[in-house]
Length: 335
Image (cartoon, rainbow, N blue to C red; front, top):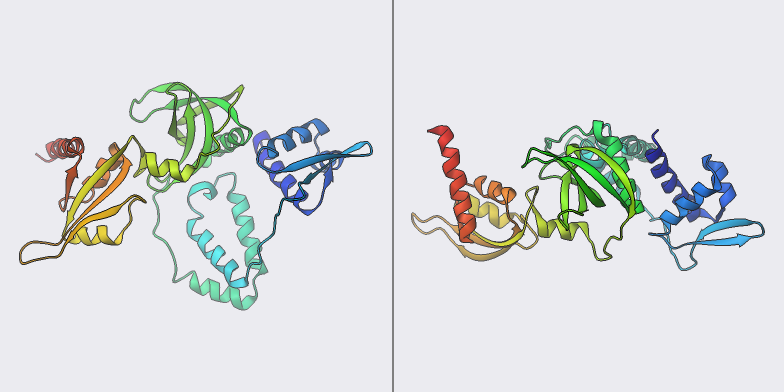
């Protein structure tokens, strides 16, 4: 196990121990086989997120959660455990718990413990349900070779440490050194890839990096302060669409025929709203016009192209011209 993996596992176990009862510094150091200085550093990191107090009792320092901190384990019903198991089995092949990742063994261990805790009758029912419930396969990348990078990035984000990455950009096809402040590691279902959301020191903005394109990283020794109002979901909704990062733009699209029915049934973005809906009349097909504020760029163009020929870009004019050029360039391959 690498140093970073041992650190991540130790931090998690320390939290679970403090939830049950206070522990002394000497007790924790002995249990994890490290010195008191290492435990002090671990608790400093955890204290950034949790209200952990240290109190001297005689000659020893004891750690505990603040009196007003509540950590109640949920009262989970057997049927709810079965649902959790089914859901995890459906997504276990992708994302953070994909085979070969640091958390893969933890996910398998969790599923095994849940399965063994269920009565045989519930196990039988769940096994039957697993044959009728499922999910379509997502063509994801193999991140087994990047598990150490994922582990280190998560550790740097937790400890608020700046890092310098060597990144092979997809658009530039160049290898560049980029000093960044890592905010979060997440799985992008649109691109079927693991990504890093980080503040790019050089460009002075929050950017997204594909983890499999990071060839090297090292800690710079500097710390950073992540904005208190940062929310990964809000950031992605505003700045990423169809797996691609870009500047937010208001888009109006008009769909017809079966695509209009698809647009009416699906929510492609939280900002999506219906502007106009017309029923089929004679030879004129039904139409639906929607508006949403999404990230501009290749992801948006790719989304529009995927719904041709029954889609029209109403606004903005720049997007309409961009899609038109993409169609014309593509047609050259079929001329």
